[in-house]
Amino acid sequence: MPESQRITLQEDLTIYHAQEQKMLLLETLAQADAVELDLSQVSEMDTAGLQLLILLKREAQKAGKKATIAAHSQAVRSVIDFCNLAAYLGDPLVIPAQETH
Image (cartoon, rainbow, N blue to C red; front, side, top):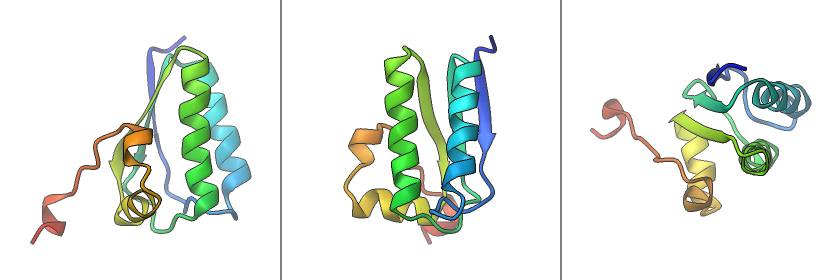
């Protein structure tokens, strides 16, 4: 079993892609000890996408594995901030330098 696997999601984290993304995330988690998500390319996220992130975190915890979000797009950060779930998800929200100016 691979120790860690990184997934870069390029499609939006919305209800329109939720089913295939759910399958991808859970299959990856089943095959690795840790999953690292790169969400820097996600341009839109809704509550279905947020539920996927919560599901991945919960399933990883139940299996004694680790799921982290390594990179957040502005859209992902906005939804996480709006729903006040940054502490629950437990990953640092890194703001790229170009967005701080």
